[in-house]
Amino acid sequence: MTLPRRVEAVVFDMDGLLVDTETVYRDVMMEVSARRGWPLPLSVFLRMVGAPREQNRKVVEEHFGLEFPFDDWFDEVGSLAHARIAVEVSLKTGVVELVDHLEALRIPRAVATSSSHHAVELQLGPSGLTRRFQTIVAAGDYVRGKPNPDPFLTAAARLGVDPAACLALEDSHNGVRAAHAAGMMTIMVPDLLEATSEMRSLCVAVEDTLHGVRALLEAQAAS
Image (tube, rainbow, N blue to C red; front, side, top):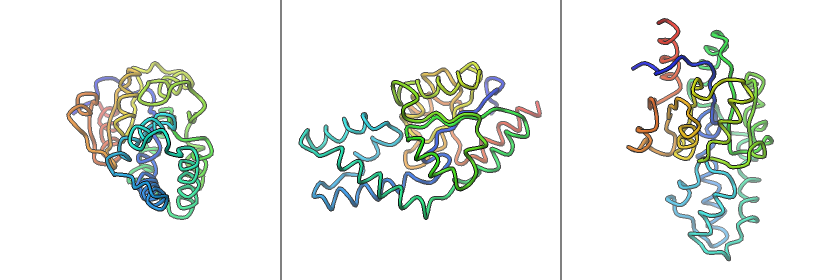
């Protein structure tokens, strides 16, 4: 297949797309919840993937009730997950090769994530990736988080590129919905969530790894 339009910029999600962190958050969240006496079903966790804090609050309180100590629980999960990520996080397959390719083509790059700037530096800083993006859009840089389009629209505005000429790369359902709502060409690279029929209808492609994304861009550059 070919991409529908010439790609002038690429906007990346972070967790589960650039770095293999979603499994860490899953395991820590399950551990903390069980220890506190509030066992968390996997189905509830999966509804939170790719979403900002306040949306996650709604999901958890919908399941456990308003008496659930969300802020204390969420902060403990974040602290333990960050400590674990600092020693064991790894880049996802094909990240470096794709960024190298985009740099060679002089295609600008951005990150649009629901995580904080601190988390971005913690997860991308050690690999040197943060300096390879023209802008980082993180929590606090936009009003409404995913699945709203705000993170992606903010990234496009900072890059000075029409959203329709941007390629968005996502692993989560909320992220795909946000990128599509922003009017971007969207490719899903699944991590913990499968590419449902809804996701396929919102994407121009679904790829197993970022190597597949690079192949599509190479084919466009050669055409």
